[in-house]
Amino acid sequence: MASLLRLLLPLFLCCVVLFSHQVKCDGVDEEDSLLRGINGYRASTLNLKILTKNANAECLADEIADQLKNQPCTNTTGANTVPGTEPQFSDYPKLLAKCHLNVSNTRDGVIMPACVPSLVPSLVLTNFTKSQYSESLNDTKYTGIGIGSEDNWIVVVLTTNTPDGSFTNAQGSQDEEESASSVPKISLVPYLLCLLMGFIFHL
Ligand SMILES: *[C@@H]1O[C@H](CO)[C@@H](O)[C@H](O)[C@H]1NC(C)=O
Ligand SMILES: *[C@@H]1O[C@H](CO)[C@@H](O)[C@H](O)[C@H]1NC(C)=O
Ligand SMILES: *[C@@H]1O[C@H](CO)[C@@H](O)[C@H](O)[C@H]1NC(C)=O
Ligand SMILES: *[C@@H]1O[C@H](CO)[C@@H](O)[C@H](O)[C@H]1NC(C)=O
Image (cartoon, rainbow, N blue to C red; front, side, top):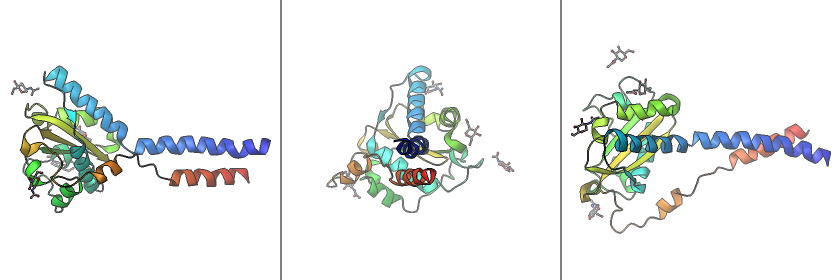
């Protein structure tokens, strides 16, 4: 009995540590916090309607964050980008297609990437509310929002309620991929590591 406890306790502690680490790494907290921050800013400072979540815009934001994740934060990237020198994504049509979108239903939207080391929530929010991006947040034509993040990058995509910016699914493609990607991605690796650690502690 005692030896079983000796095996299980470190295993349990290790799982708690790894699991909380993994959840934090996922960026979901940062995305939720930014969404609340932006909608709070819209409602209280700008007196505009809150933005509603758009799953396809979120998908695109995730894809773009994934492309940017290896770029370092500098004073010319993200919210500091000089207008007109925004990063071009060579495979942009591919990213759109992955999210069941195409140019004709996204061209009125806007893509706003920001780079903030460790995605510190207060800095992330001001990178949108106190930068060139604030103009878009204060634009009544935008009604929807999707947020994605990877490492130090967080990307906001705004959508409109017109056909050219609706980010609705392209005709004919059904959303198998979307439903697959909305399933939480919980990797088995931390659990295998836990098991291994448990054995090491036990020996
Ligand atoms: C960005 O940083 C570099 C060096 O760190 C500096 O020379 C440059 O003036 C800065 N640019 C802006 C726009 O602040
Ligand atoms: C944006 O984030 C950077 C960190 O990368 C920070 O230095 C900067 O002050 C932030 N900008 C604004 C306008 O909040
Ligand atoms: C938002 O836009 C309105 C109307 O264009 C303008 O009057 C207001 O000053 C703007 N607010 C901010 C915080 O930029
Ligand atoms: C883009 O999607 C729209 C709406 O679903 C569709 O009518 C249009 O044909 C598509 N365009 C391209 C180039 O695929």
